[in-house]
Image 1 (cartoon, rainbow, N blue to C red):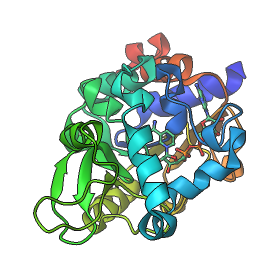
Image 2: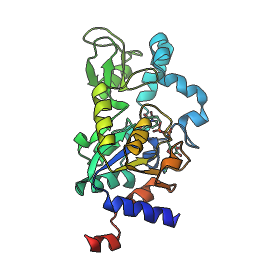
Image 3: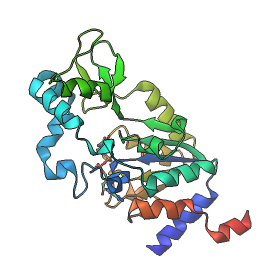
Image 4: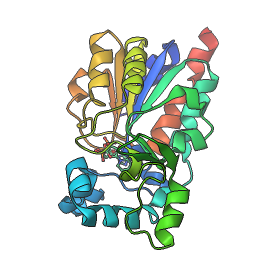
Length: 258
Ligand code: NAD
């Protein structure tokens, strides 16, 4: 509602340290479907979840071959940042953005021009690979070139181990440093904003709870209800490409005060 937006804008305008948690909903308007929204990948095909599970990936060469085939066709290769991503760049230029914790693997925050040091990729990036044996890192593009050249299930060139995209699948633990930095950013803010996340994937969703319990105002921007709506100071349901630029623009009444 207009009242809710007004309240959120005032909290935004007076906040001094803002931490955000972003999810797949931020990139749907860039042409990358989410998982659980009405047109989400899993809403349409519940079996697709199997591809995101580390146990089936490790155990089943068919799952790996299918994963490698689908990676080259991922919409993120051609996606461009949208007005929602750009709003975070504007917010950063006000010097008040403490960090963006993102569940997205599409690097669109960085491509929009956000300082990479402000971005915590909780679930990694689809543009890299990791060896499940030696931990060696590589580029996705080069590995997909090997797939195009006929390797259906490419392995690590250094040790022969199994390769995977540098993303966190279900059943895998998150990077400890990323989690620690995210916790710090969640605790060290007076406003915590969530954008385009169903807040159902842990530990990511827990950062909203952590920040709220530590006293931060919680603003939730998501098209559908989330489990944390009742804890929020404001809940905004509109499309993020509209809501986020409106939030970031400082209201005139507030400009005069400062
Ligand atoms: P999710 O699919 O669980 O939830 C996305 C939410 O965004 C939904 O509740 C939906 O209603 C909302 N939404 C969609 N478009 C919106 C819009 N334009 N404006 C406002 N709200 C909108 O996503 P999640 O919470 O991020 O969890 C999904 C998991 O899937 C994460 O682990 C993430 O790593 C992965 N994922 C990433 C991408 C990506 O990198 N772009 C895409 C799909 C899935």
